Image 1: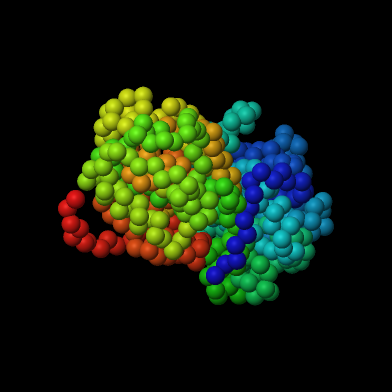
Image 2 (image 1 turned 135 degrees about the horizontal axis):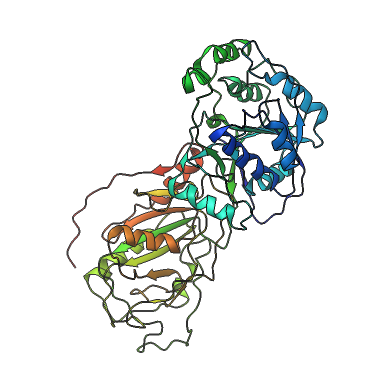
Length: 492
């Protein structure tokens, strides 16, 4: 199992890094793609040293335009393809900084890139950082002058991007001189990236998977520059030569990583959000008139601390309205409280609230829609379906961006439950099941999310097993499904 290393998004990186690449000719669409990528590198904080190798068309002019270094003289093979041993050797001599990064020239980087490197360097002396990419169709130059270009691009990734496979390795981050020499690999051909991983493993270097905290955006493109297309790049003659000279025999994928970067888990936020979808939930007002309770007024909902619904015994608020639906909800809630795993929050989403019965402001229950949606659920877009636990942070920017002031709820209380621990939400208009799920996801503050119908219950070890499965298979597991056991409950 990979060791976990948690990355804090609020840390401002100060470490200098050197980035190098071997671009293709800057012609047509690939020219736009490479210009987008290299420009994004220049905007990282702190600004890295960037070295472009080779004398392909447009490389010199792009280097001058963006103010980056250009090394035109590199060795090529008989096909005219640049050889990486020459490139790596010159980087060792010319790079200003001790941390160097080889990256393909079609990869756009965001601020999370340097944040992750900084914190890995604080924990490990030697390492090879790799990670899965996000594939995205982009056909136009990015408007980098816009202050929101990163947010705009991230939203595009969430909506239409696709997470790359574990064998697609587009960046390698490591201390200078970790790979003092490499074989005469042809760049852009298969197997040399596999050699990097297998060699690091053989030498005992920590291999760090940054997929969950670094959003590396790969701009989809054709392989028109090769006669045999994509297959030629990965399996053609030059790829086979790479395999032979590198003696590549093992798989060497990102799944072989020995360390896993994770977004920092805010201890004020739960790790699992349990969203219970209710057909007909009746609630009572914030301060039921039949109970002698202090006037709490409207307040921000703070998720439960570790220990589950620890506040339940502080104020046992009881709703005067109890029906068969609320009894089912209580059964579902009890099954969550009985979990062996205690780091969770509960969100109840009502489908058909009884207008005026126990709900303030005509049952809307929502004072402000606000900006409370989480700005970062990078691995699984919120509009994708599924049942079970979803890891909402994988592959993301590393920033959880929890705007706790964004959603302010006028809380209703379920029978016998502390309103400060069980949050209730109402949809505004669309009350279909998918819309209810989206409403719950807007409020969720957990690293993982699991959906539960109000007529269902969880076995006591359900959350514990689900979270353990993600921790155990964190580099490959995106969605966890589980079977349902049918039980005939007595009618209420």
